[in-house]
Every structure is written in structure tokens, then in C-alpha cells.
Length: 513
Image (tube, rainbow, N blue to C red):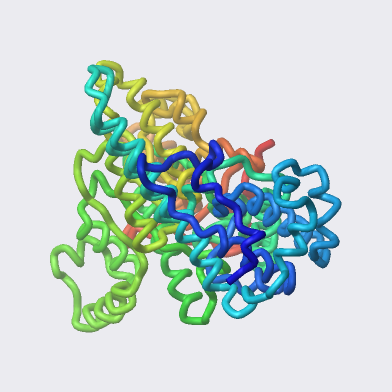
């Protein structure tokens, strides 16, 4: 047993932050375990490095213990040795600690050292009890909300809020919704920079699988909403599918090499397809990986050798951490709920939505499509932040593009709502110039030579740009705008990097401000 002098009794008078108990019951807590664990840390600072679960100050039931642990973490971050003596100056004016005997309490924490026998067990118990207390709070709020029968209450909104709260508890984040210190934010930033450095100086987020795109944007960053837009026929679904496959495939490759998910630039990917079925998307990916056209696969017009190549491709794809949800008529609330489940079950690191305009809002703004789209775009941005992963949402463009001589899309072409541009961290447009380059009219008897010259000029230009696509980065919060040239193989709906000699013949990429 630990020294009883070090134990507190907060269960009878919990702090306001912890006041979420049920009448007649004390909140789950073990103050003795908290004190014993802190004693072990003060005796041997290396204890914190061996924890299986990330213990935070907010996980401690007794506020004094939380403050002590927070100061320990700050000092360790400065590479200092933490003992009761080095902690003493920071707690001499702590009123709550004075009630326990002042700074002498810090020394009493190290009294028997029994916490060194099983510090990980103590830490896990502190963590688990914190989650139980958070679950009590969520349950209490759920009951109170469900008892409200006023007309202003929307049951589906309550269900979504409850599911979001339960997800945070399951993810261990329920007690960590407070403001982050600058030190914590800096650590996260340094980890991203380190990942970019280790990847060769290009990718700090999730890979797109396209080196030219990665070099421009630095990868897909957590919490970012990326809008990928284009007119029909430009290949936006193909590009989104390629990126989803590339990210999932990179994670699979890294896992085979023993690289953990936290170090990999790949990601398990969730693809919400509101337009195409899951088997249609699978056919596209099989076509891309086997090199056989999608139409040939659908009609079965393939040779025995091609079928063998298809079989080999399917064996690898069977292990791919890519999850397709093709539920039609999905609401933004439903999508967020499904994404949380996938995050919890499969630890997804990337979400693709095809496409934004097919999602439905909450039902409150059905009389105003612009407001509904605004609600959906905000919901997707909130989802990206909540799950700390990038979300790629495909979007339609207005027909204004077709009416201009220059067919390159602009931000003003985003269909139905300016809030899409406002909520997005990046806006990409897919543009294929060969799609708009039409063959000249047939020659007339009287002007055959002139038309022949025009046709020759057209053929030369078509040869130069055929199969070349542009990814126009019209908005990027973290960097410059501009465009990236890529190769597009329409037969197998695959985007890839251009070879250096192809880039030279087409011309340099356009750089923005």
C-alpha cells in the first residue's frame, strides 16, 4: 500500500471538469494508482518512454496529479531530469498542493517506489478509468438530450452527436478536447517535417503516388479538405481512384518492409462512391494494374495471357487496405458516421468522396441547394479535422467552362456554392486539352490546300498533347498554385508521371504565385 498521507478524496468533491457522475455513485477513479505512478516516474523518468498507451494530464482524476504530470512532460521535453527537487519551484504557490503539505508531497510520492514494479499496468488503469469517466459524461448528456421533446430538437442530429462523442471516447480523445499548448503543436509539426525529410524532401503527408504532384503539394496533409473538380470526361474519378489505390498500396508495401503506419506515407483508404458501384470501381483498378482496358474486361474480350495477368493483379489487390462504400443517397451525417467506424475498425488515413453534389444535407436546407452544399462542404472539412486525415471530395463544374475560348477551369466555375472554395484547403482541376481539340471540318473542293494545311497543323498539335493531362492547383493554403502535367491513358483510366523528355516537348509546368 502507498502511504495514506498522499491519498486525496476527490470523489466526494470532484473538480468542475470532472463533475459528470451519476447520482448515488462515485466516478471511476483510483487516486492511489495515480500517486504511485507519479512516484515511479519521479524515481525513473524512463518509465514514460515505455508506456503502451499515450497518457495525458487530462487522464488524471485528481487535478493536482494532472498538473504535476503536465509539468513532468514539459521538463522532459526540455531534456531535463525530473525529480521532486526540480519540480519544487513550480509548485511552491500551488494552493491545492498546500492543503496536502506543500512541496513535501512531491517527495512523499517517491516514498516506497512500489510503482516501479508495474508502471505500465498503473498507466493503463489510469487511462482506462479516464475513458470510463468520459463515457459516463457522454451517457449523461445523451439521456438529458433524449428527454428533450421540444420541436426544435432533431433526433438524427442527436444520434450523430452521440456517435461522434462515443467515437472520441473509443479513440481515447474524449478527455483531450482542450486547447493544445504550443509545445504540443510544435512536436506535431516537427514530426511532419521529419517525415518529409525521411521521404527525400517531398512528402510530409500521405502520398498521391504521383511524384510530380507530391513535389508540388508535399503530399496530402491531415485535416485538409481537397476539392478535385472537372467537367465530365476529364478523368476526375480516374485520378481519385488512382490516388486511393496508390496510398493504400504504399501502406501495404511499407508494412511488408516492417515500416509502421505512423512512419509510412501510405494510408488505408475509404472510398465513398455515390455514383459508381463497388464492382465498377474494382474493375477500373483491375484494368489499371493489369494493363487491360476496362471495356475489354467488362465484355470478357481478353486472351488467356491477359486473364493470367488479371489473376496475378487480383491476388495482390485482395490484400489492399482500400474500403469501398457505394451506398446511394448518403447524407453528410451518414457519411461521417460510417467514416468514424472505418477509422475505429481499420485506422483509415484517407477518405475519398465521389462526388460532393450527390451527398444530401440534413434536410433543413432542401429548399435552398446552395445552403445545402455549404452544409455538406463544412461537414467534410469538419470530418477531416475530427479524424485528422485528408479528405478528397470530387465536385462538378458549371457549364461556363464550355462557353469560354480558354477551357481551363477557374475557381468561379465551382458549381452551386462559393463555400466549397472557402472550406477547401486545396482546389484541384483536371484538364485534358486533347478533349477540346476537335478535328477541322472536311475540306471543300475549292479550298482543299488550305484545309489540308489546317488539318496538318491540327494533327501536329494533337500528337503533341494527346494523352497529356493537367492538374491545375487553383488554391493551396500551404503553398503556391500552378499546374502539373501528367500522362493519362484513357484505355485503362490511369494517370502517371510524364518522362523528362515528354515534359520538355510539352513545355514547363505553370507556376502560380
